Length: 228
Image 1: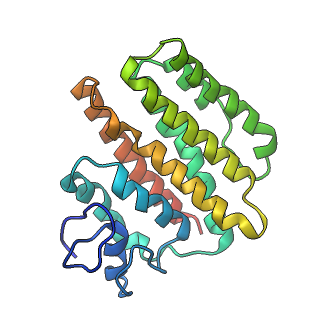
Image 2 (image 1 turned 180 degrees about the vertical axis):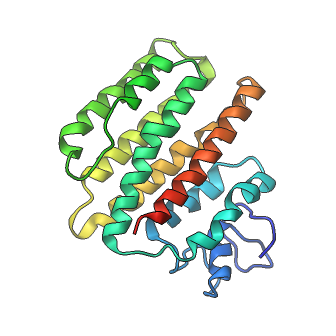
């Protein structure tokens, strides 16, 4: 299917297609934004990314359409999907967030995150406190005007999304793991999408951060699909 990817869900392909609906068509499934052939965690993440992260249909299509072929074969076991949920959070905290912080001259805070170990099921109880302390530095920086005023709300959004993802990971066990994994995916999607709301910053800076975030997002999905 060589056509523009558009915002939201649709009744049929004639009305439009989002990324996940394009996947359902490619896989030969009934038209839906929840295709069975796509990993539950990745579809939860990308459904929101499709709607939140892009300024226009052209950029959405350019970035996301190359992922369709790999996504339609990404359905996996519960253990693999849990591992992908951890990857979503680690990428948000250790890659996307430092990129954004450095772009807005908060390199010291970026280095704090980059020095932390990736979260794993084995260390989350002991390491999550370090992440929350690092996130508190962002919140503190916002409260004492260490960042441009227009970024205060955006960084607070990322702070809340990252904190929510860590909390959901720590509860991702038992029969409710899928609900928590979906929460992780939604938090990661909101964090990855925050740059699209920065309409007051230097256009060149915003453009550079946006393209960097898009590249990270594509790399993240490809790495997630590779987990088997």
